Length: 165
Image 1 (cartoon, one colour):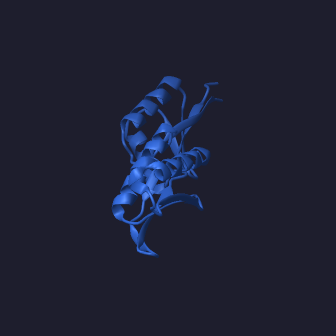
Image 2 (cartoon, rainbow, N blue to C red; image 1 turned 90 degrees about the vertical axis):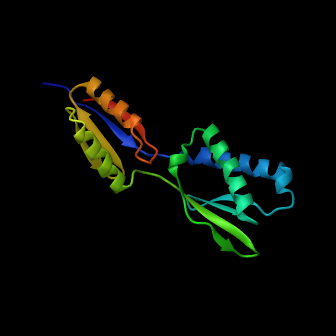
Image 3 (cartoon, rainbow, N blue to C red; image 1 turned 120 degrees about the horizontal axis):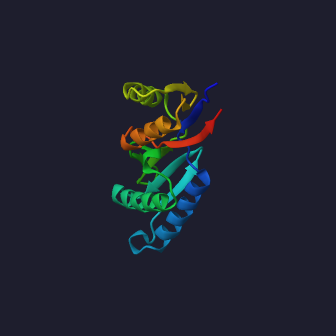
């Protein structure tokens, strides 16, 4: 009987690393000269980031600091979904940044279609917020991973659960 090999395409964000990046950002903002006396803040609320500052320039500067800290901690910026900047109380502005957890169904369909269009001998199926790819040959599965890494789907993707049954 032939062995069946498979792996999962997932999108997971490590919230402990996000929290560490937020703490580093807060520390740097409190020490920087251009933020002295400002009310700029970054916090994690219900799995989303909330950025607040006096004006859009400070918000952008703080966002740049946050992004650099996230990248250093191994969090992909593709996992961030920026909402529009909105005015807040006390003549400040705020922005909600949603953190992607799981692959959205539209993107999962796009990934499955890409795999099927590649004409490799594998099967791809959507299972909740993950995509499972299975096939007989491990080398073919590694070819699929290489093709997926070379293509930008606009989401953060990891490949895990690689196994032989």
